[in-house]
Image (cartoon, rainbow, N blue to C red):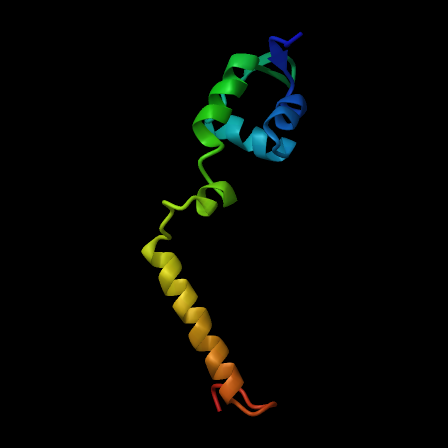
Length: 100
């Protein structure tokens, strides 16, 4: 049977996140929590489902594996930069730095 309210740690386990990440999302307002008692926050099951639907699933490796995925321009620049740095390191004799 599904529960109506979860603690921060239980919500983190449901979302596959760390408790610190969930606490940060509550602090930012990305997840709405209600103060139940003292320092105990309660997060509704509906709020967990909403956050998962809106903020998870469209990012990461699953998206990049898609055949429609095209990397951003910044990713192309970063890849070219790493390739140039690697080529420079291979050209230099061992023990010399690029600044000499």
